[in-house]
Amino acid sequence: MRALVINQYKQPLQEVDVREPVVGDHDVLVQVKAAGLNQLDEKIRLGEFKQILPYKLPLILGNELAGVVVQVGRKVRSFKVGDEVFARPDKDRIGTFAERIAVAEADLAIKPASISMEEAGSLPLVALTAWQALVESGGVGPGQRVLIHAGAGGVGSLAIQLAKYLGATVATTVSAGNEDFVRALGADVVVDYRAEDFAEILRDYDLVLDSLGGENLERSLRVLKPGGKAIGISGPPDPGFARQLGGNAVLRGVMTLLSAGIRRKARRLGVTYEFLFMRASGSQLGEIAALIDAGEIRPVVGRVVPFGQTPDILAALDKGGVRGKTVVSHS
Image (cartoon, rainbow, N blue to C red):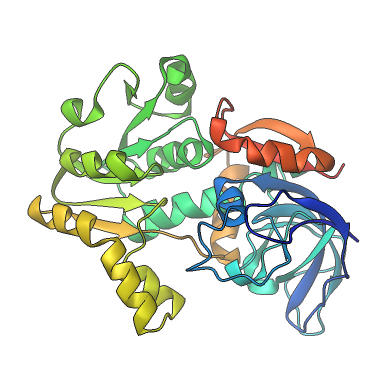
């Protein structure tokens, strides 16, 4: 089958023939119809995560998909051939930039019936990130105030909708041209990051979801009320993430040092910082699918491109300019 692989870090994706996936007893073989493109894919290609995600090369990239079940393992009970599904495979089993992929049954969910394959392929990674940040870690509920950075992006556009569904007041940062777009998603307060300083405008927020890192993350601590939390998805990784990985003492030490500065600044302000690297979860995708079919959340797809254009589009992903997600289609 055809797939897009990297043979060395920082090298372009190459389209090559690879072996068919091995389908284990608890695996589901999926014919990929659509796969979302994410900054995570590009960071992996550049080797930025090789210390914490030590993949063996050559590697098929791709972290989310929608498709059709073509084979099931002998112990699979929840899916059958012909089911339309979507998933974020486990971090150790990525590879959705391919014609087919074997996914663990536990990581898979039935695709929302009300949306297309391309829309479903845009969802798993960003929707799970938003869910795990806002529901699991943030415990967001009615009356709380949440700041979501980069509200016009893939994660931001889903997180705004989910936070509003949970009952929060939502602020977001975007360029002026995206104000109407994010207000339509549910944003209550919109800050033009090019003309305004969010850290001077916003106060007493319960939670910040930061996808930018660096100085933006540090300034985000200032908008939190005492006891508030900043969740970063661009780093730096913290000791909790090292425990999640089951890392050795050296890895735990490295991550402790990487995040020492931001955690120290958070403590001085009476707030906390947490790094989130979302995990695969078919059960959570099932809950998200129910919200989509109920009309509470909608996917935001800004661009659909053919499989062959993936290498060029992925390399230019950080230039922005697309609302929501870019999706690769096998149609």
